[in-house]
Image (cartoon, rainbow, N blue to C red; front, top):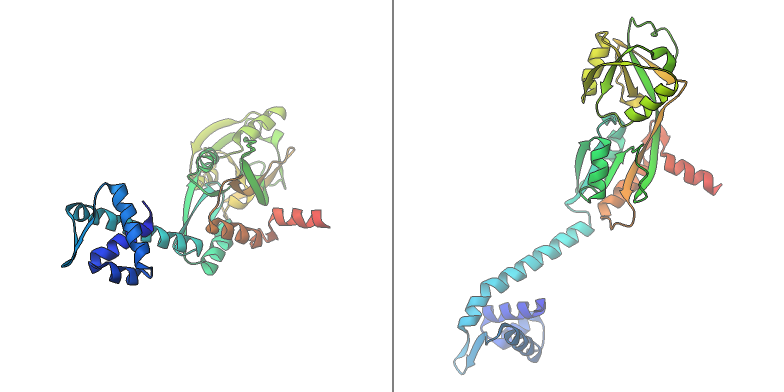
Length: 307
């Protein structure tokens, strides 16, 4: 069954005249008649009865009319949706954002998309690194802004955006608060407030062990604001990325050194997967945006390679 056959059938239903139906469809009458005959052959019976008094629907024609009208309606809807999709009108973009990335880091990107392409419907999924990785590979997300330190997945394409160092958050009166930086060895025996969604927790654990440092985990939470509240109350120290830490007067923040730990945040997509025009907009905006006051790392590296 071809869509033009459905269209011709419905035109004859409206006009009850093959000549007028052909004119309405802008085709020659023999072409319309031939298409109707092919449709009748496929459906197994005559759809119209024609005699000197005119053209009327047969019982089969009346039975098929609502079904074929629905086919035409859905075809028109699909075409309109495809056109809107191609022109970025009401186009959804499913973007995952790792929950340990501070929202302030993404304001310029999201604002740029909204200003230049207001018809893109940005659907943001906020989750931990492992969940985002699975949803991205499974096709539930088109892209993610994340860091996957423990996943060397060749299926993924990473466009690095920015790097940030991990810091130690301390109570104001902590014995290390006067230091300009905190060495891992200096945290031996300290009370540790664990961020449950930290994607670098296993990396840090191994590095701390190599430094001979053993900490005492006294609290665990999925919420960074609770961790910081516990730090401010003097219950222990926190291990957090630099740009996730808000400006607060009741805690002290110092870089972790010996060893330093950094993470690289990237725009992540799946290699070889067909992408929507909206994803193209996201990539363009991400490469144009400033990240912590600097160009995206991917742009810096491409420029360096070209020189």
